[in-house]
Length: 246
Image: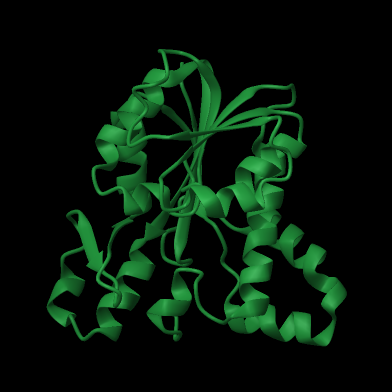
């Protein structure tokens, strides 16, 4: 378990150094994962503009699905609007079959979308053969930490089934083990390349290293991406997976 409050665990709290590190890890992982040639990327990360803009800077054309509440926010964050097309939609019905090269679902998008199976089936439909998906979800570690913090001890033993966890703000998150995430992806028709914790370095470790030397951020990011094991869901608040369509 992580000894920090639930409002910090979802990235909205005040652990500044850790979330700076976390976003740097996501950015570098996305750099390594994105196609090497200009491609069409579908961004399902919630319409905040950060990762669609990142992909656009790498030379890709991006379709970013946003909702009405976040449309203005994402417009303000875009850095390359010529390469990013924003679409306000509740599903992917506006896209034809096999129309995108890759799908990015960051910002816990499939944990917030409780009907993740249906969402993944739609992702597979719009992917071209050989297309890839990068998915980030909340882990069981996170779910159990939140439940423990709220004294829902009886629920901690129910880890073999779908875990729906109430946040203190009243929202619900769906938490996954690595096995459940693999089943979600393969059940939709994808081949899993890897599943791993997004980060294994603790906030206290990151804070200590950066307090000692602010130039150590790049070293911390390389250490994180090169060192942590695949399929280990015993650490880390989020799991990230890469999969492709045959």
